[in-house]
Amino acid sequence: MTMAATTIPIHAAKQRSPSFEYLSTKKDELVGWARKFSLFPYPFVTACCAMEFMSVSSSPYDTDRFGAALPRFSPRQSDLLMVVGTLTHKQAPILLKVYEQMCEPKWVMAFGACATSGGFYQNYAAVAGIDKIIPVDIYVPGCPPRPETVIDAIMMLQDRIARSSHLIVNDKF
Amino acid sequence: MSAQVFDVVQQQLAPVTGECSLSHGTLVIAFPPPALLDIVRRLKNEFKFDLLLDVTAVDWPEQAPRFEVVYHFYSTTHRVRVRLKTRVLATDPTVDSLVPLFGSANFMERECHDMYGIDFRGNPDLRPILLYEGFVGHPLRKDYPKQQEQPLVPFRT
Image (cartoon, rainbow over all chains, first blue to last red; front, top):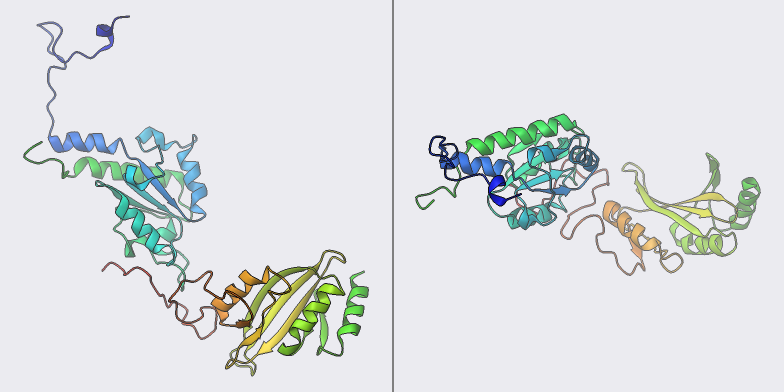
C-alpha cells in the first residue's frame, strides 16, 4: 500500500475533479467545530451524582460519541468543568482554585440538583448552587439526572460552542 | 445473656450512677458529669466494654441542664451495648475527655465540639474537624438559624 493512496489530496489529483481543493467556511465556525468535538471534561465529583456520571461516561451511554470522553484529572488540560454533586462551603475555595487553573476556553456544567441550586440542602453546610462561586454555562437538573439529560446537555453545550464567536479569531488569524 | 451482664453492671455501678433503665435492649445509665471518667474506666476494665462507638450530644433548649452528652459503648466479649448520658449546663458545657482511655474519642469529641460546643476537658486537639476555622457558633444547637451560611468564598453578585 502506498502513502499516496490513503492521503486526502490537498490539490485536485485530476484537472477535471476539483474536490478538496478548498473549503469555504467562516473562521468562527471552523474553530467552533473543532472545539465542540474536543471537550476534555474535568470531573469535580463530590457526591452521589458520581454514580450517574460513571454510568453516562461508560459504555452503555458513552459520551465518547460526542468527543467529550476523556476525563482529564488535571484542570490545566481540560475545557469542561463538570461539577458533579453537592458543594459545601468548606470545598468552595477548592472549586474556585480548580476553575482558575483551567485555561481558556473553558465551560462549566452544573451536574444535578445540588450543583444547580443546592437541592434539598438549605443549611449551614451547603452552597446553594455553584453559580454563587463560579459562572455556569449549562445546568443539568435531576437527582440524579438521567443519562439522557446529561447527553442532551452536552449536545446543547456543543451547539452553543459551535455558534459562539471565539477569542482566537482576530485580525492575525 | 445480656440481662445478666446488665444486672451486674447496674449493681456494681449503683453507688456512682443515678437511675438505670433499659431502652430497646440497651442499658441506659444516667449520671452527673464528674462521675464520667470513673464509670468509663470501670466499664472498660471490669466489664469489658472495649469499643467506644459514638460521642454525641442532645440540645434540650427548654430544660435546665441544657445539653445531654451521650456515649455508646460495645462489649466485644459480651456482645451488648450500653449508653451513657450526662447533663451539662449551657453556661459551662464541660465534661472530661475520654482520650486517655479511648484514643478513638479524639475525633468524635472534636465533632461534638464543632456541632454542639461541648468542651472536652483534656482533649489534646479541639480544632474544628467538620467545620472550618472562623466558623461562628455551633450549627446543631437549636438556636442556630437553620439557613445561616458562613461562606469562605465571597459570592458572585
